[in-house]
Image (cartoon, rainbow, N blue to C red; front, top):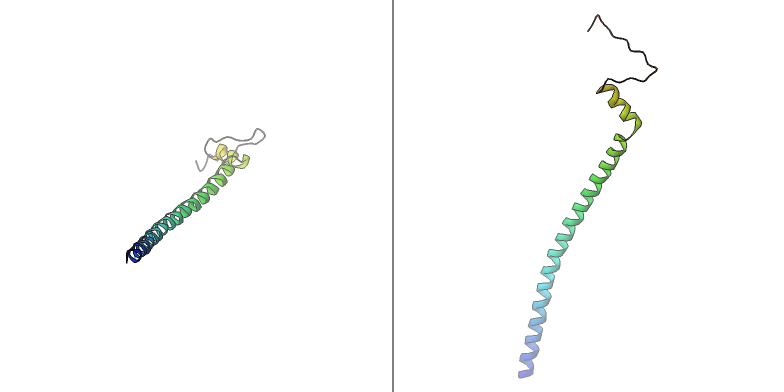
Length: 86
């Protein structure tokens, strides 16, 4: 009789541990999935920023900004001002 009680207690405890570990694994898997989604979003953002950095450092973009924002021209260019249409 004592052996049956010990075996039953062991089986109950093993079942309890199995169920608790299953719940813990489910939580961990959900957290892992969320973290993987965050990593993927961060990688996409990183690629966008690298692309933007490449564009901002290009000579073409720098020339465009110098022309539009600062009104600069190349040394060999001639500027014509339309005085009739201000």
